[in-house]
Structure formats: structure tokens, C-alpha cells
Amino acid sequence: MGDSTFEIYEDMAGQWRWRLVHDNGNIIADSGEGYSTMSKAEEGIQAVRESATEADVVRLD
Image (cartoon, rainbow, N blue to C red; front, side, top):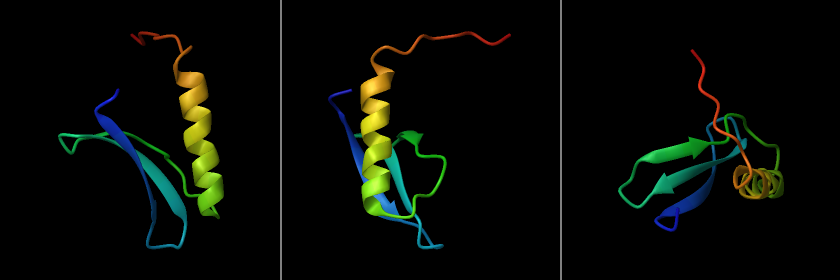
């Protein structure tokens, strides 16, 4: 995913969120929840980076 960027932003409720955006502008993933601080949002990004490389793909039927 070298063509993508994590963006951190503050939402309308004052919560911090992140999204992973491809260079074509499509949102690939998002935090799904708001964080109380920017540093907590950064921790969420780090958790995704660390766990996604080992994540299995499961097909739900």
C-alpha cells in the first residue's frame, strides 16, 4: 500500500479519527470510532499497521 496515506482529523464532535486514503482519493479504511486525543488516534493507526500484515482473510457466506 505504498500509494496510500493515513490522515488524522478532528470530527464535528471534537473527536479524533483516522482514515487510510489511496492516492486516487478513495478511502480504503477508517477508524470507525472517534478518539479523545490525537495521540490515541495515532495509537489506533499503529495498531492497524502492526496487526494487518498478519491478518487472515475470511470469506463470510
